[in-house]
View 1 (tube, helix red, strand yellow):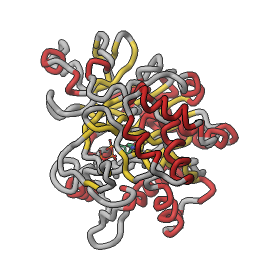
View 2: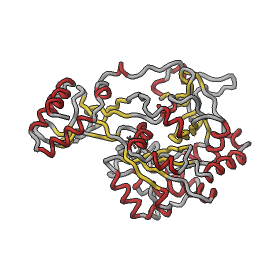
View 3: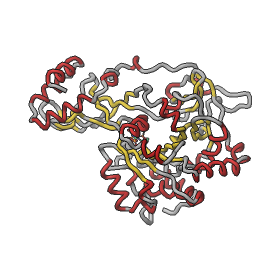
View 4: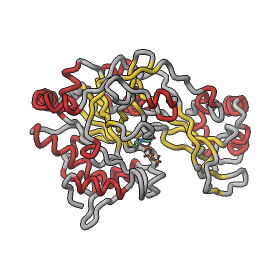
Length: 408
Ligand code: UTP
């Protein structure tokens, strides 16, 4: 971008302070900052403080799930079908590990966190062991793609190298980086984290497929003939990856995507619920639902919106390609964002001081025509580590791992 263009763009968007900062830089600094400004999605930044720009919800209706008792009845057949697809090399897995894990408050990649009690048990290691349960059964390996960000990519790769990929064959593991997004203060002014750098953070987990395309990693998916991708979060240490029963049931259903869900513990549980929105599958957050919807019940007394998502989805690759350029809703979230002021002083706020902009994988479901809602038993498959203590914490996950016979 030429200098006069840069000045024009920044002034047009009310970002004069960035232009001021730019002018004080040496050539290398100017180049760095200009290339960041060039990548800014201004439509995203314009949403700062404008809740009215967020997309309105359509008409919600319940979506029934394939429930545990039904799955049990057909488990062998589903598993056989899933294993067949895995053996044919049609299933790949994507580990979402680009987040910053701010709630856990550990520096570096969350997957490096050691949850062991009497020995080392790293989150990444647990996930690889879970995947190996399947690959041992299938007698072949499942390609694993790991999404990182500029903030944790090198450290993640170094860790896998150091631990020798926890025994998983290295040629089946590939890393790719997600996109970064800027942050703003409450007035929509871009924050800076260094004198020659905007404050950038990973743009949420929803851009993962787009990032697979722009980084070229999708070529590997094609070369291997992968037709289905199982995507999952780093922080659920009971995560079943490339679960053949889930794969088989989704194939059998003829749907183009699948989502693992758990029965809600109570109507007001704070989880996103899989339902229909304007006739298409959709995930609606608890705070987007009215009391009436939350409490509505079916004739059999069950909650109508009874199944919460656990960030474990199956997507058909050709369908992902069809929607890869679709506009996804931007979620504007208030966060504590470290920044430097006009004088170059660094601040690490104790309270939220601005906005970050995120895309979420759950919004991809609504772009697709259909989705199999697949119920799993919560205590067997859901042990998320978000916090150090309390709900969804290292403590609660340890207890669940032990309940499932994992030595820590
Ligand atoms: P979370 O929503 O829990 O976010 O991520 P987080 O960044 O890990 O943690 P907090 O909110 O800062 O405490 C759910 C999953 O999505 C991934 C995370 O790594 C995790 O697997 N994720 C999140 C990304 O891959 N990229 C992102 O930009 C955000």
